[in-house]
View 1 (spheres, rainbow, N blue to C red):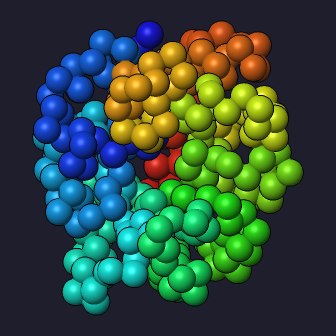
View 2 (view 1 turned 45 degrees about the vertical axis):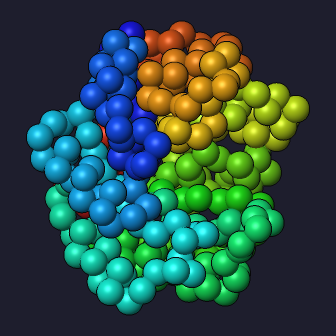
View 3 (view 1 turned 90 degrees about the vertical axis):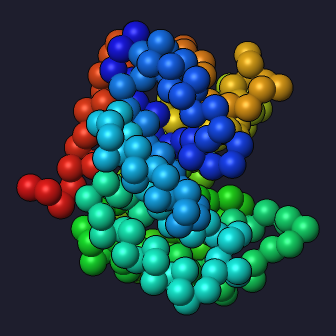
Length: 260
């Protein structure tokens, strides 16, 4: 079914980029019209920008990921700032807070400083943000409430129905990925899928992560977004065409921010 938009996919990273052409063929066959290529390194962003210059199928977002900011140099920051100003870069992201207990974690204060810095750049450029939030709902929304002046996307939304209204009030859209197909016991997120206003709902793969339940065991890629669409349609009792058209309108509205 044509007109699908994947609002968050890491297809220029080390895992998926080696088979980029094959992956795009699969995406087109699945009906995908647009992919937001999300980049967490500047070299990755340069690859994506070159692709976006060649094809309208691709938009680009770039930023430094919360658990990478501890190794970022000031020169890296300067290079990122220059890339963010380019017209192919439609959004600043993914940025945010991540409190998962990884083997090597970035201190919360360093994450916070990087989050605020990148929010301020988004404010200055008038571009939306893509927010990564893992086990950090309260701190994430407190920082956004104080500093954010642009709309954006709560990527792979995990704040549950309880926090949903706060993010909507800040101008955010909620995007759902393959995890909703296998984290069925997470009733709060399933409820958020059912209850988020249709005009604030987006879909994504987060490829190569979060492969939907029916195809788990493979690297995720854009063509598998159809499983996310089907799950949302079942939960909300709606037709695929209605959801796809609404998501396309939402994405276009958000990415047109600042251009009026």
